[in-house]
Length: 159
Image 1 (cartoon, rainbow, N blue to C red):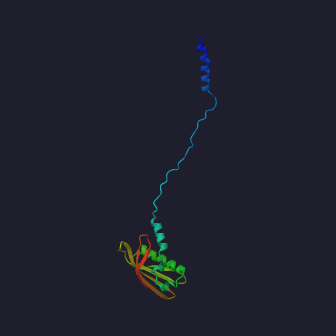
Image 2: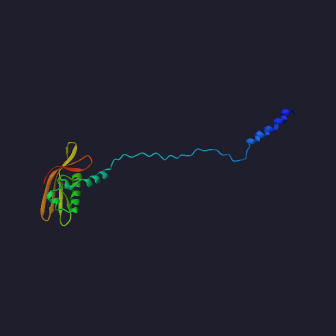
Image 3: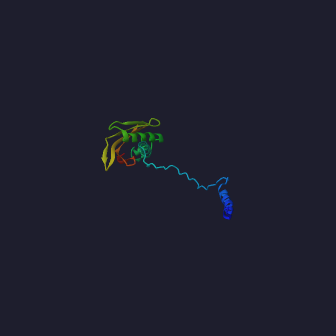
């Protein structure tokens, strides 16, 4: 063998031995980032039931639906019963069909509405709200219009 071959053989063995290692191989890994599933915001539009409940809560008989003299004699329960009857009569009532209500200690009332009329792009109805307290009758007539948010407001009324 040539002198070069004798010297090259051990170098070749050592070079290849460095490649064949039994030590565990470590591979650097980047951190794994888990992204949450995308969420899409639903539009903030109230359902008809939510709109009705909100309008019922914010439409008040003390805003011209009931004779002011009667309001001073009515309890909180009387006002709540009158308010509910007033709202549902305006919202869903048939023209001329009164919606009766009763409160505390014999206080009663009824609300009658007319047909829907379109005024300035709003639905309006005439109403008559009668309250009976201790044998005395209070009558209030007016026109109420439903605003864009569902609330009913008195446009004109006569106590």
